[in-house]
Amino acid sequence: MPLDEARFPQLIRELYQTVARLEEMFPGRPFTPDGHMVGSLAECYAEYYYGLKLYECSNAGHDARGTDIDVEIKATQRSRVALRSGPQKLLVFKICANGSFEEVYNGNGERVWALVADKKMPSNGQHQVSLARLRELMKYVPEIERIVRVRAQESIQPAVLASPASPLRQGRA
Image 1 (spheres, rainbow, N blue to C red):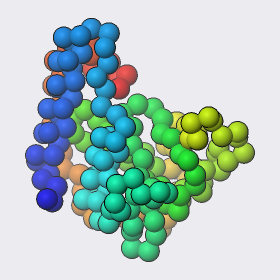
Image 2 (spheres, helix red, strand yellow):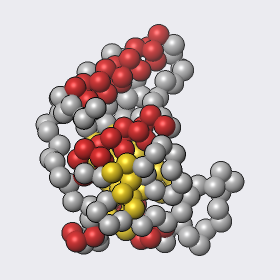
Image 3 (tube, rainbow, N blue to C red):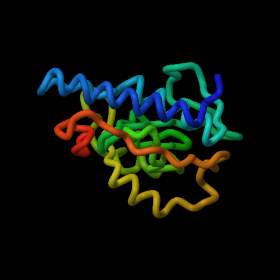
Image 4 (cartoon, rainbow, N blue to C red):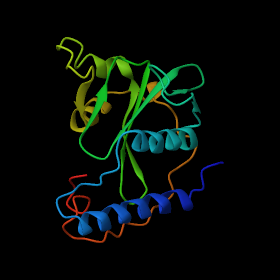
């Protein structure tokens, strides 16, 4: 099914509204969407907005194929992403509660991997890289190196969350 530009962000907003309601119902218990779901959302964005061809889920090393290069797609709602290796191309998104995304990094993966390559591999096999560091690196990525968007992101309505105390309202998600 192709991405519905109106419905997809609405479903994400509804998801975050449900999270806020659950967190209101069970104070102190986080219901943060993460893992496969956030990764799959990012992959759907990449396929639709960048024209990438997705590989089967959980493909080792890369998530999609561009015109002539493999692409690793990473996403978070927080402040870091995890890398196991240096991909050919890396596309990093921050997923927003209003159903939109921020492109944080779009360029060669080796540039990012160089930040952590000399460090001891953590026990979970993944190096953490902050979005702040990726944003800084992005300033030096030449246009010719970036994966070109094939569609613009439509304006997205702001999220309406149930609780002012929700971590999503306070920017902790």
